[in-house]
Image 1 (tube, rainbow, N blue to C red):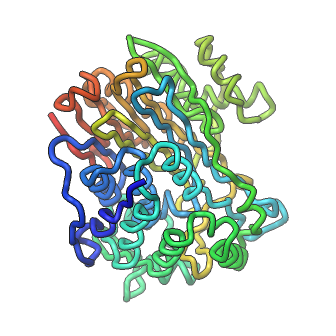
Image 2: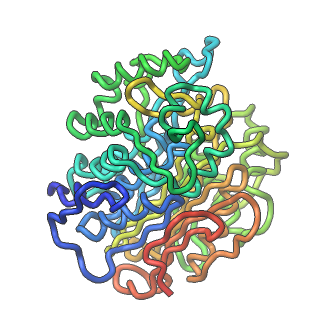
Length: 453
């Protein structure tokens, strides 16, 4: 792979660092990005503009979110990504939902999930990326080191949980101003210890968090914070590659996240029903009630989707917050991701000197409905992609957004807590870039690049 030194200096003016460009910027259409957090979205677009592909940009975006949106996507978090490129029949799903540690059930103070974000993004970039991974850590590291203005979404999340979050000394040192008040929109968020962890992963490899010296420091810090994790938890938790759920409707082929990202099935059934019928959480609740509360497996989920039958259930417990993004490059390669901490700011505590915010254990918190889908024409052309956040309505919102993106229009999502991100190329990509546009929910504080017509 060619080294991506080019991203080392693209970390936005907000970083306060140098902006020397080491490689020329690509001309014309380079791709589209839509995400809940604007600076992370800009980093992804910079990667595309400097020759990276969609998987490279999606990896850099996810790492940047660990700095700019640690309420929903720290290095302690996890999630799932869907990837497709011309030549693929269905694409691939990368599932890195954070599991509980083996000791989580033993009366831990604040049981933490096993950190999975870095492992999931590593696997995605290994399979679909085109550049050296270590360069993709640089924008996130620089944002953490030099500081980044707090986005509207992060400020909102901080306001919601500030009393509990600021009770922890390490969190208070990161998320407050000199006068002791919580950071607000456009205040500078500096995370020097997190920058050190990112730099360590850049130079020593992602595996250092899962079995090396960084992993040992992380486990010690997590346990001091009541997380109840050990190094074997980190070593044994692996991201997986799975076949997506698939369907065909309206002349396009559709791929969706598979279980245990259960929002994918609900999204798929609602999409095929034109956005009408039972809610996605009712589908998942119905399945679980019929199977003793168990998460469905991929084969059973595909059979259910093929049958068109949506099991009715009551509802799920209040689900945790999440975040989503979509990236498409000029060739049509596309990545759509949904990430979560299993609670706003996870456990609300920091893993010692790593600066990593710990995600909440699924042993104590319900699993979010992670939802993303990609529409393509056979193996040749990309048409649309969407992903969404929104607690119990995330999958419903994603289905509505994908339906609109396939039709080449902006979604009519005007109420509820769902927030969608989508990319639409109604004339197909590659070959018809002028038809493409990105969209992010205008009620949020995200960014879509380019916006297009």
